[in-house]
Length: 88
Image (cartoon, rainbow, N blue to C red):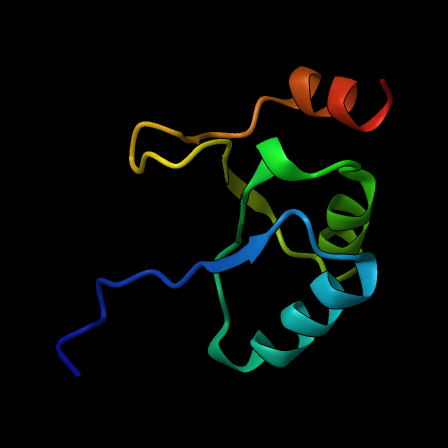
């Protein structure tokens, strides 16, 4: 009660494997997150596993971080930049 205005987002490191991301999505599904925010995109060697995991769990990508400064390095996902990241 009193927290009806809160939105819950799942925050996952982009350096995790497909298996890690899928497990996190499934583990926290009970709290009904509104979407996923991927952190550490600047440290991830490959980005495909994180996106395929969220798609398979029907979890919208709502944000990414690509640096140490929050909120300055928190960004809304830009589809073209993400495609370029996945398919270099």
